Length: 117
Image (cartoon, rainbow, N blue to C red; front, side, top):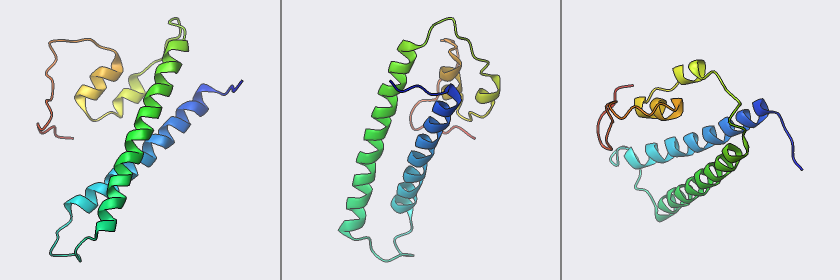
C-alpha cells in the first residue's frame, strides 16, 4: 500500500503538469518558427514532435485516470478553500470548472476564440 501526504501528491501532480507544459511550449516554438530564419526542419524534427504529442497524450490520459480514482476515493465531507489556487488560474472557463460552479449563464469561450490573459 502506498500512502503519502496530500501536499506531496499535489506537488507531484504540479511537476507532471509543468513537464507537459514545457514540452508543449517546445512544440509550439518548433511549429511556429519563421522558416526563413532557420534551416529547414528535417523529418527527424517532425518525428520528435510527433513523439512528443504521443508522450503528452499518454501522460494527460494517465493523470486524468489517476485523478478520477483519487476523486472517487475522497470522502465528500472533505472541504478545501479554493480561493487562493483559483486566483492563479488565468482562463475563465477553466477557473469556472475548477471552482465547481455550475453557472450555465456564464459566457463560454469557444475553441478558436481569443481570451486575453
